[in-house]
Image (cartoon, rainbow, N blue to C red; front, side):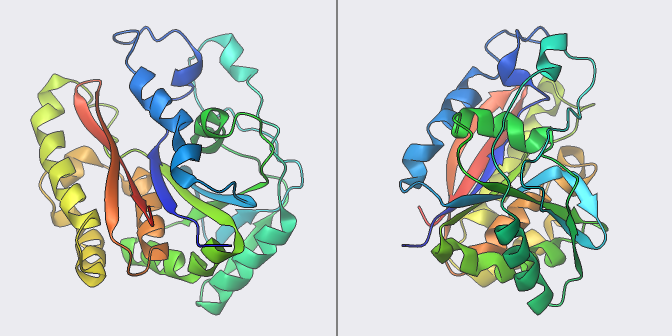
Length: 267
C-alpha cells in the first residue's frame, strides 16, 4: 500500500458541528464541517486504521488506547443535553496500539497502554464528519506531559513507518486556541501567527520546518494564539511523521473573529 498522507485538522469548539450554534453566527462552523466531510477525498485510499493525536489528552509516560471497543469521553461542558448522547462506535485496534508502543519505545519513549480510556471530543467529534460510518479501527495517542515541541516531533518521526502500513495519522487541535481571546480584537494577531505557521509548515526544507516549529514560542502572537500549546502539538507529531515531505495548507477560515487553518503532508 502506498504511504498515506498526514493531517493536522481543527476539531472546532466542543460538539459545535452537532448543535444549533448560539454563541455567534449560526453558520460559524459550517465551512469547517464541510471541509472535514471532504477529507476522505483528500486521503484517497481507505485507511486500514487511524491513529489520532488530540490536544485533549496528556500523559507521562505517553499513553495509547488499547480498548477493543472504546467508549466516548464527553469532555465538554455547558452544551445541549443531546450532545452528551452522540455516538461514534468505531472499533479500537489493540494490535495497532502495540505497534505504536513498539515504535515509540524504539525511539526512547516510555509508553503505557490504556485499556480503559475512550476517545475524547477532539477525536470523535471531527471523525463523526470524516468517517461517519465509524467502521475504521481507531487508536488514540496522548501528548507527552511537559508539552515539549521537539519531543512531539521525535514522536512523529518514530511513527512514520505506520504510513506505509495503511495507518492514517491525524493530529487534531486548533491552530488558534485561546478561549478568552476569540473575537475581532484578536484577529490581527491571529493573522500574524497563522502567516508564520503557514511559512513554517510549508517550508521546502524539512530541517528549517522542524527548527521553526521547535521554536514556535518566538513566533509573532504565539502566546496569544496558544497560552498553552496542547492544541498546537498534534501538528508537531504530524510534521515529524512527514519526513522530508513539504507541508501544505489545506483549509483556512475566519472563526469567531480569528484565523484557523489545517495542514497536510504527502498530498
